Picture 1 (cartoon, rainbow, N blue to C red):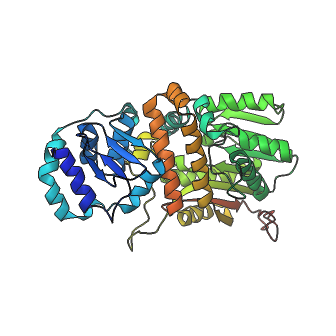
Picture 2: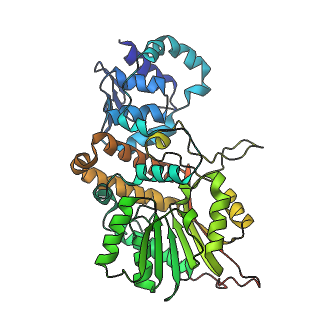
Picture 3: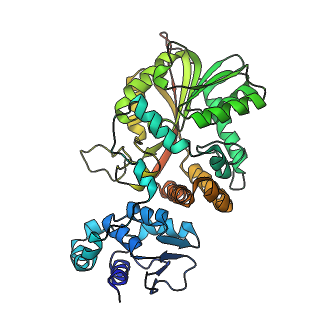
Length: 424
């Protein structure tokens, strides 16, 4: 048995919590795991195993998959569920000692690193220039590519489903209406949408609620398509789409502010400046809604702060969200209140994001050949793995997502909030 096959066999036998219902094919053709499983992970060459040895866990697996040295035949959902059955080798010194003589030669084998790795950089300050570059890396992949999996709504954030049979487009419309209801939007109000994407939120608010809206984004491709959509809908007199950093808003004020899926790009060190800016741009009595992914505080050791950053060596940080940071919702609410925004309502949408991502993965798989033609197989695989793994993490509770509604109360305490919320 080749050393790579022996290594895989040992890991499957000793580093898993019970049998994993997957079929594995080693580079030499040896079948491991469950031979009758519906899904196969195929190691096409020693590069795949070397990636896993050199970077154990999600990064090594992601590199092997993105490079094509590892293939998934069957359901990617079976693969991402495997994570729950793996015991970290770092916590098992006896197994590490046993594997060392086998894995040692593979540490000397340097497999090619997939091209997307070139985008990686260490966590760095969230300057305007750095944030613009990070946004372009993630969002300027191509509007046609995003449309393949986002659907007609062109909304890249968690939808809100009435039931399991609700369509993705209807669920995105429901999310926009939920945000509008929480903000109490009425005709004639002025709305700011920070991180407006392709303009879906401001278009809904202007069409359904009669507001005038400003949407800001750092993505040139998003802004271009958002302006086209606004013009096609005849909303140019009501909606202004700008390529603008939130720090450059100037002295404008708004009746309401929404920020949907943008706070992940702000950075912990910049939260005071961000919430101060939001407060100053919001008229007294106005409301702001932040819709953001969060890290859970569960598992933090006593006396230590919860981990808030996307790990700089992880797959998502290197390939998907460079310099992204996630915050625990309690910390986030505390920061909002310290800088003059009164938290009034919080809602978790965790299961909804798991469902949203499943729709996106199914759409991407259904348009796979077109996706590969648009962005190349490596980048298509990045998004395939990232969205499937994220869906699983929302289902398992490893990731959370919340809508936090706050007010900039007037000096006399007036907040514009109803005595009882009317949204469902």
